[in-house]
Length: 131
Image (cartoon, rainbow, N blue to C red; front, side, top):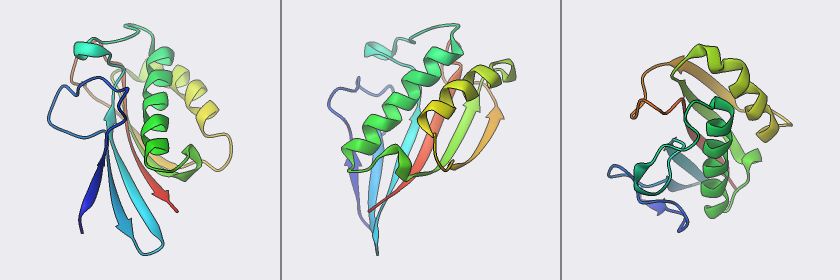
């Protein structure tokens, strides 16, 4: 099944060969797979070093922008894959995360791991069902 790349024009150039999202048509709508988002600016500069809450907000805004570019809303997000560099940031992460999912919560998992750049504290990849 072919897919459509979703790359919001305001995003910085990716630091690797990927699209922000990939939208695949389905029977009653489409499924959007959102790449792992990091708090990165132009040239791969890490934004908000040392601030997990600010990085979480930046990442969730990037996911929101990608979902909206594909025709959906954050309410369409069904699954989040969460990666934290340090579980000490779990409470700060959850406080911001709850703001973006006030109603029914998507399924998710959260693991502790190293991320692509040492200053990155949070990465989230998402799956949304649109339509």
